[in-house]
Length: 405
Length: 180
Image 1 (tube, each protein chain N blue to C red):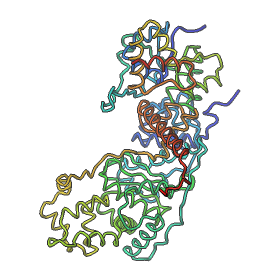
Image 2: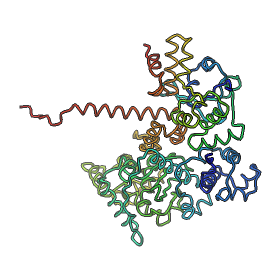
Image 3: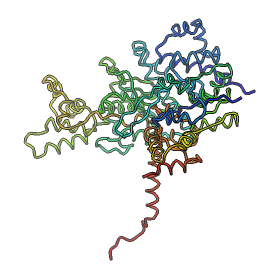
Image 4: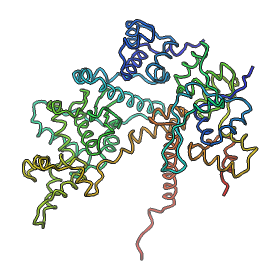
């Protein structure tokens, strides 16, 4: 007779999955041991993989953690967990805020789901990673300027605003970028390992400009501190570390390159007696998808605004959101695609092939079944409409002379 | 011995809930109708009739209280073991539905391609499968064309379902929904 799935699965894998689920549920080993009628040491042994769980124990644990049994016994490929990496570099912050670890665990789950979709559809990830930049010892501003300029050149971005940063990083470099809910003080997370590649999580609840900044910031970590898992926390004391300041400086220079900004400021000032106005700067911030504060501070650094402009505006009670509303700027549109487009396309393809069930699809897409069905339909229509476009193009004679004579 | 009820997977249950005629549709099964506890625990939503309408969360509680749906769970050791085994390849609702269906030789309603493939491969003819189109086709026998059209269109809109291309009843479905 075939061995059961609990006999086949590596107990260390199952133990690690159970441990992650317990932590996400916010339970201690002792709090689990009591309702399970076990000693705490038994829970420790199960999580370490030293003791196999029985079917009934697994069903009880899944219920206790509010998780699906299938999450624990799925046949998906096993990868090294990001959590120990985060623990190694962010121990203090994780000890202080137990809920922060959930952001790391969710990044792991999303990245594993993505890799699993690639495996079952046989469409491997394409990565175009250069080695990390060597940044030790150099001045922060100079290093950030060098790396930002080199990456803009490599990605062919010129010196203007970047409207589609996420798509560029996903498509051109193969980064895995996810938007999801995190505790409000976390802006983003970054982690890397060989099987999963570079993975970035951005807090979906933050405003558009913050999200864009966080994405550039985490991209900076990918370029300069790749082997160090990182949680970006919105706290002044945390932002003092050298790697955080470098990533922030990189974000500033990458999103707002000096040459492009200088040119726009010159154009704005031309032929005007009033010079550049507050409305100009607010519109410029919107164009570059950065906060008004970030834009003003950058222009101060570039000496296109007097030093202390931002501080003065703050003292005067300036409220950026109010000003943006007056100018008709919606700086906080919801994120339309929390998952990468390619991830969704792979999930739809896996469903079409019968490699994913509908329930699994909904779980991969982090939504309910009917919304997942709608996404599948939308993806199918896109494919059909593209096929129609190709059909029309096939009849087009591109060699036809356009000379009217 | 074949027990006299049909176990509905979420993929079919959502479509039946979308009809707004749950009692009449379930009666056409000529058996009782049931769901497993994993399906009952799943958060199920339906869309509104207009694209701008918010989605609605469905509660199975009233249907279970009225006796229109029975809730079943894995009871024996064999059912629990089979459920966990199937959960390696399916989600919980799908795995528990098939485990109960096989162990109790119950008719199962699922539209899911993967669940159907696994059921056929593992259980052969020991599990009899129905789909949404089978159930709606039976219900439609006693209905006028306009009612059938309206209900099937509602399934398409609020449950976003249409039978797959390999469903023998797809042509019937398309004809039935093509009313002016």
